[in-house]
Length: 134
Length: 133
Image (cartoon, helix red, strand yellow):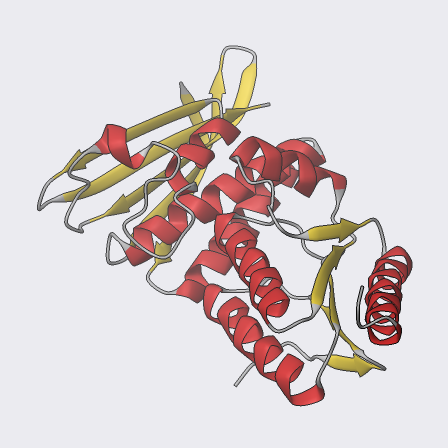
């Protein structure tokens, strides 16, 4: 997979969640995603970014414009150095929540993108990678 | 502190969300609305989200909470103007906003609130006129 362009942004506060939503939106517009796909990707980014800030204790999001053959897409990599997710499968189940949400955050986000991967190590942190293809 | 304005229109409260809300702002709106319902004795709340480009699980939860709290305080809530792309995404996310009434636009939302207010007023009148019934 070829990375044509990338940019990292901090995710430390609730305001950063808002800014990252706006940044993802403008990258999705630039790639020519349909309005529905833009909305899905921004919503997924919002869920994961909140997770990074609230449970991961803050981190970063890297946006990458990627190309795979004739496919073009947007890859988002969320990283934190928080406590890690003890049971990833459980965290992805609908209804699971360790905080104030509806428990649809990560599982819901997975349904809104084409690729979704969690790499989490206890005591070291969590990296969540998603890709939406155009 | 940043706040979303709440307008009073007769017996109803009107809110139009026109900014990309961070979580604290959404919670602030939830608190403010609950307090205003009590203070004004409001019978209905209309929340227009036609400017909202996304509704994620957090905002969805806040909308659900507002509807539930207003119900407990004897007021109805209607959410209006959801964009089609937002509706599609919400359902795929797994959120169907249970307990939240919706209308396509502000005008229909107001009609819905007025109708449910009239219905309740009528039911109260009938109960008063016929204490045996």
